[in-house]
Length: 126
Image (cartoon, rainbow, N blue to C red; front, side, top):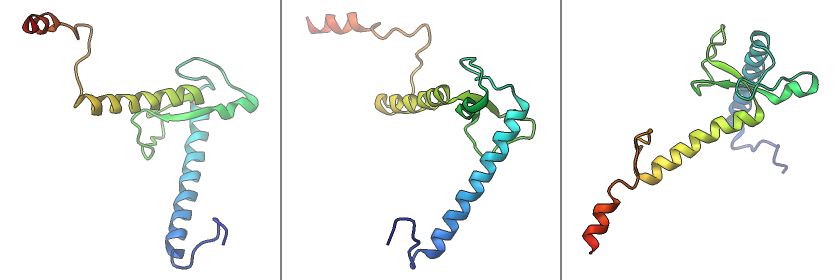
């Protein structure tokens, strides 16, 4: 049995999954086409312009990360090249990983001083 042949016991599940994939692909094509009509073929981050065969390197990024939020005016979308799109999603993965490792989110603004209490710790050791 090939990996593409549906199993008899999972036939209904396979049908449902296949239909979900088809619906997603149709939705993706629909909002990508609309986004390409609404916005110039330029990456919103790096500013590179795309045309011809390279147009396929532009992706539609959902600003709120909700792929079902596709307003007709495109207010939840921006066109990003594949590299900037990967970077955009990677920063959220890195942030989540850092928050998990540190036990929660910390304020790391301009006033953050990681070694502020180091002097007190060193005094205690003497």
